[in-house]
Image (tube, rainbow over all chains, first blue to last red; front, side, top):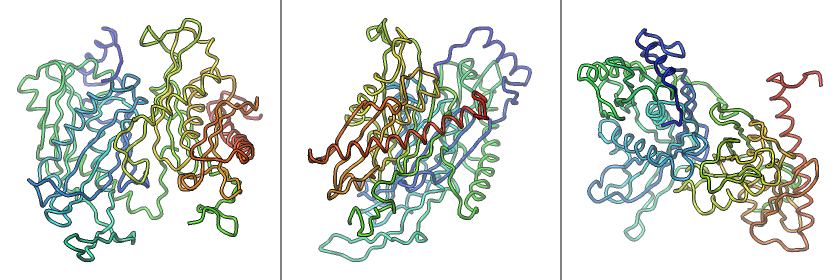
Length: 290
Length: 240
């Protein structure tokens, strides 16, 4: 992902360190870097969140639009993911350079939220068959510092949690077409139920049977292969994908899946705790980028 | 909706010649050589500079001076309507304009055979987008330590029913015009002048003069922030 070249000596240093149970920045194998989340930065969007995990910085915005549903799913709303790797994240993303990474990220997010249990899209329906709410989730990668999948999924969950959609009332019918009234009252909002929204956990295999969580760009250079696991708050796995040119031994793979499950449950719990804490602060001023 | 109320106040409560609040910050990110963020009212722009570094395509290399490239993009939620494509023809045109502005300001002969990349990200657009992009790029270049002849400072101005307005928002420029002026503040010379929508020739001088005055005010705010940043990093004496 990142354009970092490491010498053989540096790679050995990292690998041997992991074998001894300590990583370059002092973390243990299954430790995350410092995580900062802030919601509600972008006032022009229905919901937004900014997540910083170490050197990785992503900005997620959610906008709601009303559209006619596709004929095969007339009673469900939709959620679409778009990822944009901006050039200030890494110079190789200039022009169309970041498209491959963007496509794989948005495909992963689509799969993550494809299950009806993750996000109840039937609640996004306004008039069955005619009008549904479509959530456009736009992910902007601002700085690429390793472990994009996890950061983006945490951000998406936080942004969906922070999404406030004005309530829509059907006021009448005018010649077959329904008329809507969008509520102006800031208290009358609909929210998205994220109690089952999953997050992604990345395990990078550094050496024979050892994996690390939340790899830095240098570690990503050393490890040949990684597995990305989508975990719900209840510990169910919604999606897995193996990325990279390498192999996993079956025992290592199942151990990674199991530890991802345990970690996922813990992280969900912490995340919701923090989000509720953030919401309870009265008259909160968004710090934003300043 | 009137642009100026009978009491002389605009939609956001400012007077006609009042600049919007400016907040800026240098050095947000570690990977780029220079990074900066600026907020001019509700217009929020992030800029990152990579360089001077090796030229990526040898065909573009110039052995006498450096090559300057700029890419501007917008996030989907930067305006009320969702923006479908982050980069399109309009942003490409603006990118070329911004790169052109910095050709005059960067001491290109100091970096022969290299490339300086400026990447600008518009997070929220509410009028004066090009100005904010240029200002953010200047700060990012300062943070990167690229040699500049002078700061490049930019501001917008407009005219409404013979009343000149400084630093217009999206709504105000939609009903009138938007003149963007970029200057080198210490030298007082104009680097770029751009006008959107129609402006009568009789009013041109007035509006450009107002924009230049606005630029000087923006320069004060930006240089203040740079001084604070350098003081925090102990790069300059704090008793100055």
